[in-house]
Amino acid sequence: MRGFKGFLFIFLVGFSLGIVKSEIVDRIVAVVGSEVITQSELERAYKLDELGVIGLGVGGELSKREYLEKMVEKKLITQEVRKQGTTVSSEEIEKEIERKRRSLGLTQEGLEAELKRQGLSMEKYREMVRDNLAMGKLISKEVQGVEITDQEIQSYYQLHQEQFHNPFRVHLYQIVIKEGPEAKARIKQVKEKFKAGVKFSELVKIFSAVGKEEEGDLGWMVLGSLKPELREVISEMELGGLSQVYKDGAGYHIFWLSGWECWVNIPGEEEAGVMETRVAQSVSGLRCEIKNRSIMVEGKELLVPVEDCVLDVGGMIRNYLYQKQMEERYQVWIEKLKAKSYIEIRL
Image 1 (cartoon, one colour):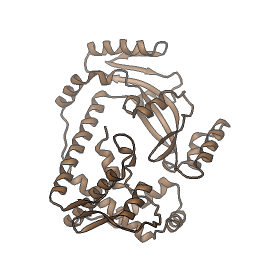
Image 2 (cartoon, rainbow, N blue to C red):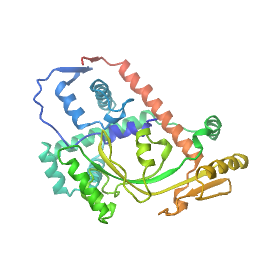
Image 3 (cartoon, rainbow, N blue to C red):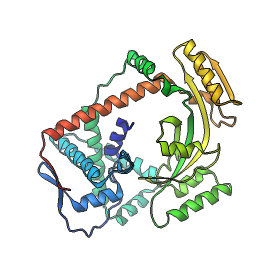
Image 4 (tube, rainbow, N blue to C red):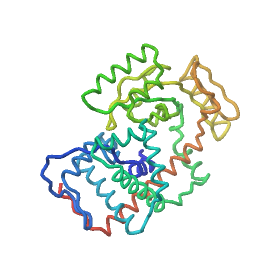
């Protein structure tokens, strides 16, 4: 399930450096209060995925109609920002620009050159950053106050115990290559250089469109929580090897599997014993042990300390319920904004 974090991402950093020139004769495709969204604005945003949501459709990519609805939501929030007088300091703006610059692996001169190439001035870019930070602040304020109790966690565990059977985790790194005429050639280069012994972290710096500052590190992820098609790609990987190319709305992904493990904290001794049997049966031949109601299974060549990779079921449930309630609050709030605004979709 997509969590509230995705919604914050959309509005905090959901803008692109790119701008394309459209030859489409403008027509109005949506009216939001006293403002409009034109056909060319929709085409540009959809092509560049300016909101960062194109891959979030139920069946894959969002349709243009669905994407337009997301643009309407963003415009509603922008209007609410102005109404409530939500402000962002110059320091916050500069800090976010610096964070974005570092994540792209650009110098200040390089950032300005890229903006110029895409038809943006630095001043216009600052305005975009300011608007997105203000929207993020407003959303956070409107949906705050969620608290998850221990009783809620226990109840969820009792009703969904099957979700926590063999929750393997994988430590993934990735390279993202944007679609374009050079994409296939760049993918080939990544594979060749990796095979020749070049470190994956170095390849990230050379080829990846995102995550250069983190060297492409996605951290530890629960395998069962991934999308089915992505889970299939990761499941076929060998420890220390590269994945097949995985494509989504963000571009082409190449993953590197640095480690995997399964460590589960169980509420009671009896449940822990059952879990130990299940895990041992599914990973015959690998190390499996139980200690203090914790079950741990690890790959023989795990590269990071086990102590840093503990999967706490209680913490996992708490985070899930928190994200779920935040998303529900966001939906209630956005529907209220829609109800008191004039909205007309003409697409």
